[in-house]
Image (cartoon, rainbow, N blue to C red):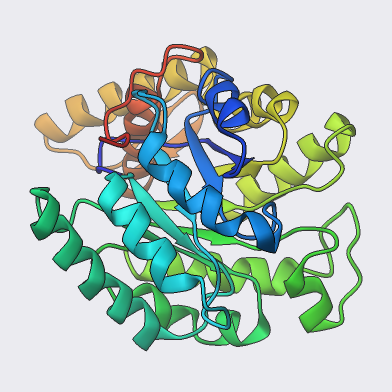
Length: 303
C-alpha cells in the first residue's frame, strides 16, 4: 500500500477457492483480502497457501490474512505470501509488538530474495482483543510497514467476546475500544485506519449505520465479507461531489486570504483558519486518490 492509495473497502474471500478470489477481484472493491484463517478449514490450509502462487493477475491490491501466532500455520503463511508478492499481510489477533517486528524482518528477507524493493509489503494488524486495544500504541509503532490497521468490530467477533460487552447496532458497547484504536492509529501517523467486518451481510441498512458511526469516529473505510456490502461502504466513505466542491471553495478562499496577509476569514458565515484548511486538504486528497469504482486502477497488487 503506497501513500497514494486511499482504500475505502477491503473484501474478504476464502483462500481455498480461487474462483471466489477471481470474483472478488472483479467486485468493485478497492482491495481484496485472501483469507487463510477463519474462512479455510484446517484440512484445506495447505491448499489455500499453495493457491497464493496462482493468484489471477489484477491491478487490485491483494492482501493475505495469515493464521495467528497460536497456530503452526503462521510462518508458512508469511513465507508463501511474501513469495507471492502480495500487497500486504493482515495479522489476526494482533497484540504482540515483538511478533510484528519479527514478521517485518521475515518480509525484508523475502523481498530481498524475490527481488522486490524492501519495505513494499504492508503489515496490517487486526485488533480483536482487549490486549490488542491496550497495546495499540506500541503495536502500531513497531514497524514502518504498518500503514493501515483494522478494528475488529464484528458482532460475534473475538473482541466482543473478550471484552464481554454487548454488541448493538448503535455501537455503544464497542465505542471506547473503537475510539482508542483510532486514536493510537492517528497518533502513529497511520492514514488508513479501517473498521472491520459487519456480519449480517443481508442487512445493508444496518451496515450503513455502522459505516457512518465508524466514519464519525475517524475511520476511512470498512472491510466487507460479501460483494453486496461494497457499494454501501463506498457510498459512505467517498466524499460527494458537493463536499469536494465545498472544501475546494473554502481552501481557495483561505489560500487567497493568506496571500493577502490574513489567516482567518469567513466563508458563508463560517470561520476558516489553518485547522479548517487542513481538513479541506485532507478531504480533497482522499477524493483525488480514490480509485474509480469497478476499474481497479490502483497499483500495488501482487506480482
